[in-house]
Length: 450
Image (cartoon, rainbow, N blue to C red):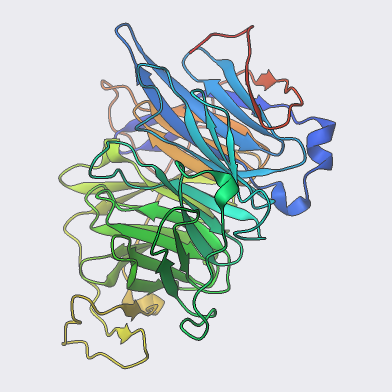
């Protein structure tokens, strides 16, 4: 197993490995389908002396808050009887002067919890009033005009629904959000919003009957990308709750998505073992990346490596591979016809109207450019998630093993991108012993404080 990933800018080195010990209780409450629920998020806190990096990870039975800089566990959220599937840090409100921690967690039971240091934890959809199916993905909403941080958060469910919540509204006042009879078709896309938004959820977006797999806001917060098991990526005007654009995958479900830093492109990964790059402005597919031999679990743009000439994309797959991709900004537009959502054909030469939702159908392999990757086998088990930050790349596999790949040093010379060095020593694994507490945030006194 390689400990170096070679790229055009130099070597990414396996700098640290961390593994949370899974207790017998964790195993008992976990169904086989939930063994792959591991996910990660990262946040950096800068003070006068240094910048500290923290990683949050969920695995069956626990949410762990890990200090990457000092390699110590600082926070634990132990979940008795529920399996955390996904989570997201509020990057604006977390680590203010009050050292606040603000995380949303989605569970297999359909519950959604907000974990914060300022006040007691809040649990939404606890009585399954809103949705009876499990949560697949969560996201914080875009900041409001009046505040730097958002009071809104979103949850995508197995039912094919995305719900918009306001964390300032009490969970005890939740009501189901059902469309008026005959106004909406439950098998097709629709979006509705409460006229008087005093109870949660305040909005409901339904793509289809298939589970939601990922939700991502564009950098300006105006568009929302929703990936679905039905094989489509939905681009929604979040301000007006209107369907803007739909991209069709080459094959199978779309499992993940991410916006480029300039909001021009969306990259997706899925069951076709490909990554696909779409041009949102031109409403077409730009290119496909071929390098994975199994499902692509997660994709992301590495903003630290995106410059005036290229975009850097990082993907993680069920084939255990971590792959880097470079996209030249002098792209070639793939021309082709599009369909209006209601089924009427649009001519290739005719531009659709600005407010007209369209379906961009998949193109055959010989009509789409392909680009080649730089890859390495990062884990012994299939990869579940990947995230980039200033210090490097972080991956997590199905068994909850987290690895930090540090960026090349500034004085390192560029190297070939097709060779993986198998030499080097494995970092010593760090083990974490969990406490069994029911949705309670704990401080580990034996480790470093925030």
